[in-house]
Amino acid sequence: MMPVSVQISALSPLETLDRVQRAASPGDAWSGFAAALAAAGYERMRCYFGVPRSRPFPMLEGESYTGGSDTSSLLEIFRAHPEYTQANPVTRHCRTGIGPLLRAGEHPSTPFSPLHRCMLADLREVLGDVDLNVFPLAPPGSETWGNFALYTDRTAAERRRVELESAALHLAALYFAAGMQARFPRSPIPDSLALTPREAECLTWAAHGLVSKEIADRLRLSQKTVDLHIAHAIRRLGARTRSHAVARAIALALIRP
Image 1 (cartoon, one colour):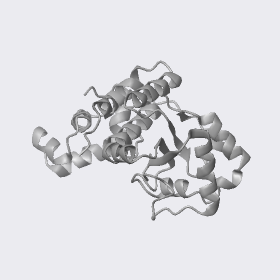
Image 2: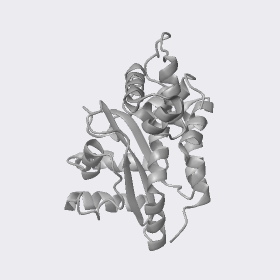
Image 3: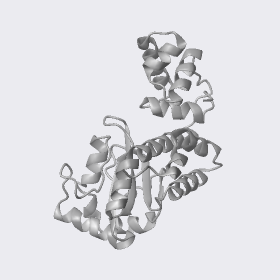
Image 4: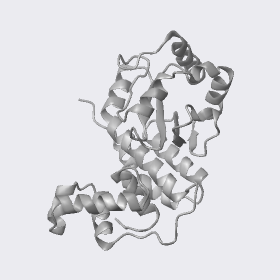
């Protein structure tokens, strides 16, 4: 079995969040994330998030949370062919699911029409003979959506590597998106925002990767009580998921894992 690359450790959730927290500007944070990906062998990527669900396609809308390599070239493709944004299978997958879509266009669960096969051909004209691997960045039902796209060589070895590292890549992108939205919010964060001591404790242990049962054992609480504290913290922080709440709490210096 091919081993997971050592460099992928630079994309661990806490390192990804720490990199965002230390960034002086959104541009610095994007550069740091891209550099970490490049060090792990992934140089071609595009990422957008925080897109209102009322907007079907962010690249034509000038979203704030958009970055990655060759973004301007890709934007030109969609400006020249607005029909590519209609019933886009990748967009539909990211708005309705949370699992990764590896080798988009070849997966039977997300078939590409002839029109969208032309879109994929145009992308390859810009990026080379690549696979399109897509990772949704928001659960179905959330107010916003987004995705993290990796463009990788269409070789057996590279495809195997992406399969092995897809979970780590997806988690890094999720934490990067959550960290960016907490560190560089579009709306001011209330000064009164605060966690109760128990909420902070539970989120701190969650940041270290503990599940509710493990947190409960450590704090001598019931699992139901831990889940309740975390649910309150999620609502208090305006987060969508546990990982999003952890990212916001770290970025706002409400917890220190």
